[in-house]
Image 1 (cartoon, rainbow over the protein chains, first blue to last red):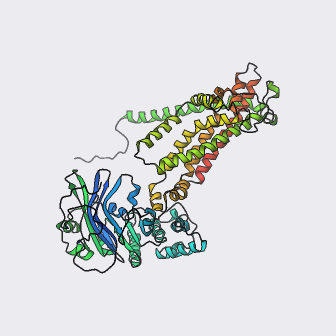
Image 2: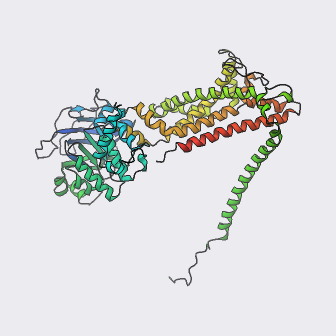
Image 3: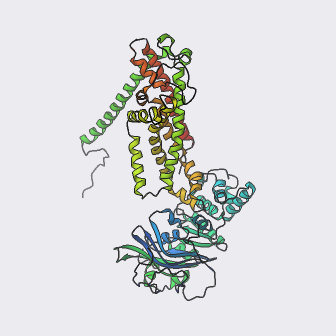
Length: 296
Length: 295
């Protein structure tokens, strides 16, 4: 299965061979010698849905205490890559990957890795707020419960801490027994963030978390991301370039190209660098064209 | 490009268009009226025939060959025994099958699709076929259970099971995938996700589907007649090996007797059966409305 793939050398990083390079270091991290610890790392990642190659040759590092934004036009595979980071793509029967994704150097798709434990450590906030049809309290307590916390007092503490962490506590503290579905869209999304941080993850993946929200709710979520980024490694997919520029420290630009093998569009990572550099002086003309609004 | 002097908002396209619109509405009303009239005639004539017979004796007396001494007690108890047994057994197996097919099985596998298609087909098989099956395998060898509560319940279970599986699968399908994703993303296992999120969200659909399946078992007579049913049983069932009769069988028997005196009894039996069915359907509606989730 793996290793038989032939690839054309398209990108500047000479990743010509896909022979499962478990601990090969990549040079795609740019010139600045950043000392932050690498938490998530994708190496020569290709993702397929059945025979369709959705995204190819992704080499990406996400670092502690930073917000990494994934941007690019529709269909470029940014969400697909994000969903590989906590094995959510396992839920799609036809999806499979080549290459590797490591978390603190451990292969999350390895034999030893349990998908549940991977997802507990690498949480996810979805595009559309998806609270459970339960009370606000139970929404937040669900994660700790399924991970084995039984003590009621402990659960109550976690719920309060998480809701405070998601800047929602003051708005809902008097109605924790109300349904989470009764909240406004922005509150629902903060509830989902509270729910995610309640299991004390290391990484929070956000898949266009503000695309269903109004500008005020969006601003609150963005503020929240700044507040919590010291505790978590955050990776955000966004369609909104201003958002990427506002909130992220590093930006990865993806694009989509016709794949000569299949004649269908396959996403690929063009470049990843500090957000400032991507938006002011990108290395690749395709990035330049996209961030200046020439396409996409 | 001249501006019309006066602006009119009346429909000037054609008279025919408006006429067809009204005609269609009239046709719909007529079909509704026809359906309601038929139903009303049936119910009213049954009520006229049956209501005078409805009293405590009718409910407490046992069926007998003499119309004046006839009641439905053993049939009522027989119906409860058979329906509850087949309902509970079917629900357990339907839940297991539907949860496996929807949440665990690989939806791309050919075997899974074949099984799904077969269950769908079984749900549409006429009840008499299940009667033949029950007669051949349960009443006679290999099980050789005779015409007992157990064999009737087994036969009706075979009939109701596919209906319940289909209904339960639909209820599980209607649970939005975002709910499952939210659960998995917190590190929940597949079973935790099914048990704590998907099943509770699917309860309204499962309850409605199951109660409709049970109603079907309650009202069914054809397969039981084929099994070799008794009608005039003068004692209540005592266990799964006991003789028994059920309401639809008794009604059938009464309405085919030569003596005219049995007709009002049949009508009264129908009223009781209808009342129970109505109550079950009402229960289904109440459960559905109580536990409905707005997404």
